[in-house]
Length: 133
Image (cartoon, rainbow, N blue to C red; front, side, top):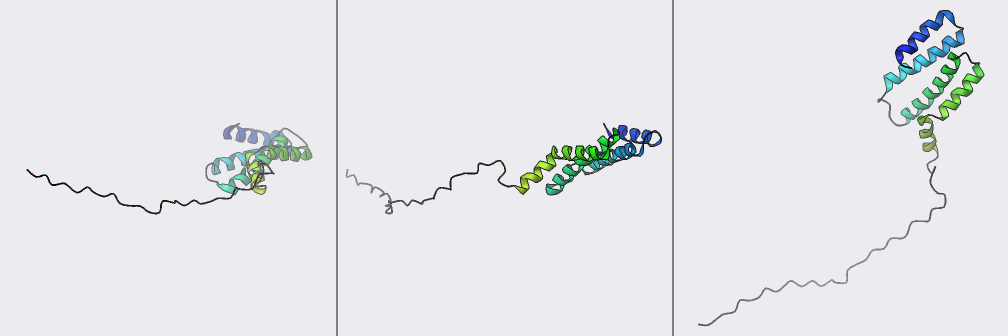
């Protein structure tokens, strides 16, 4: 569903549908508009939160647009939010050791070695011999 179809469905539903359906279309249209305005601009934690919240709101809005009950819409929105990439980015930030083995061996001690060849002698240049005639 692109922006044009979402807004056309929203305007068509205002006069013919119940108010929860209209609110559902409004939420979906608002989320599509926010996504279009913030695409590529959000970074870091803001991007993760934006993805998680937008996923939840799209789940709630689409469930309400399909004439679902409020409770079912909220449950569906929470489930959709859990599937968003923003939610998993937030989980990884809260649990830094997520996905790593818990019993890693300690780091090995490091040693330094020194060279025993402390005496470096310069090469002697050969002295030219005199040749007698």
